[in-house]
Length: 118
Length: 113
Image 1 (cartoon, rainbow over the protein chains, first blue to last red):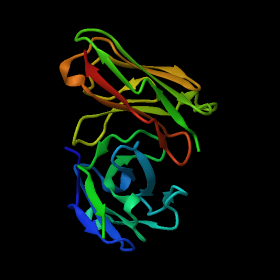
Image 2 (image 1 turned 90 degrees about the horizontal axis):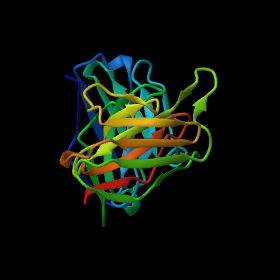
Image 3 (image 1 turned 135 degrees about the horizontal axis):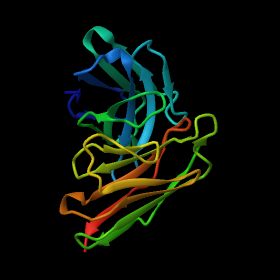
Image 4 (image 1 turned 180 degrees about the vertical axis):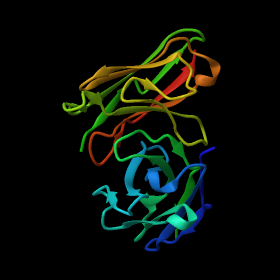
């Protein structure tokens, strides 16, 4: 079955960076996109961007453009999201999700809680 | 950015009754070349990731009960739960994937009356 398994919870100081992994299985990694979505407490879901697992092309929301980096390792069927210059407002649960460039997200990781606090 | 606005923010429905959630986009998300509406609906239960229920505004995902249906076109969309079950208590979100950034509605909380 299709699974997306994310790395564990993180606590970071303001100004630091966080890198989250999303290990996939149960399908051919390079045939899909991996989208990243975050959910801050009390806020709506917030799409951050995607990586095309077939060729490594990326697209990010302008909201995060200068701070977010999407990478991937096809040999490990794993995608990564790194967010830099963290502030308290970045405290959220971060999800990876499978999809295509134009589609809903049909499988999701379990979420990774990132807490930014001094 | 396309703004997605859901109504109501919450609703309480008796078991077995119909629940209706509306979603309005700030611009049309109907793509003229393929005549598809680029809209998805998700269900999210506490401490769980969202679950995709419906794509293309009205196509139910495999395994989703047929009491869930989606309708609408252009800028106005509806998710209907025809006969509410206890396990349907959750937050529901619409999302457009017509352009970037993908955007979600603010969510609708469905509870049992």
